[in-house]
Image (cartoon, rainbow, N blue to C red):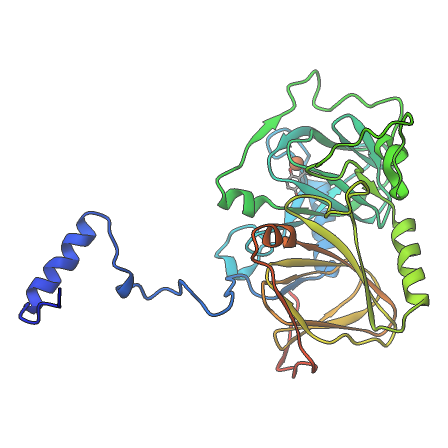
Length: 363
Ligand code: GTQ
Ligand code: FE2
């Protein structure tokens, strides 16, 4: 067959009309970027400063109760590139959650998995499928997919932490399920003993009766809480043995060494005082939370200055490099396990610092 060169303009127009009428779209007329040479995330590099967020969170504590329905006192990071969707980057939910003295957030469970990284305060425990995990600054607490969870502030102070969820990813897969705790009461009963998963799994060993009984292929880590003392001790050991400007540790499933969840990876990147890392870009999205220290990151040519409690978005494939005036610890949430599992992951390390073309002005 060869192309009928005798066809008329109106024949062609009619053909396109007929296609549209039966919900078909010819690829050769599609102008949207379908097959981009490299990822083009809609989310933009962005930073939410603690100075802005914290007073607003305190106002929320004063003005808005935590109840069934709203479920959580959470300020979600809304990336301006995402058209009003409450997502930090295309695949990740990021948020600041807080609880006032003696407040309780009701129990529920859902198919999106979540992590909490504690920023400030004492007194809250998150109960994960019956195991009450005490939370202290710098701790990471997991609430994996379909695990019941609620947050209880048993103390007299406020508490603030970062929430990261794979919610947009699960939504894109049309895999969202949610269930409120049916009771009795709004919360899981407080167990007599707290931190059971920690006693069983912490430190890379597992409590057994002598037999080898662990799951062969756990879908998520069975350790629900990772203590800051362990994280910082490991970083100290690495820093003592290296003069690299940036040292990173990934939180792992102590039984398998895998990422903490099938969808989410968590890490801490420590930038040495006076250190400056070279740019790297990675397929997949990331949300950074500054735990301590002051410094700046250059993301796709834009400089973001940061300090404790600030949160920033690094969309897929944007080159990112960090510099710190004093030693800085950055908590990093990524969707890397999904890209790796699907054969989509890649990274590129650049040999030279990026030229800085603009400086981000936080709101
Ligand atoms: O704490 O259970 O930021 O379900 C978003 C959804 C926190 C939570 C969020 C949630 C939670
Ligand atoms: Fe939840």
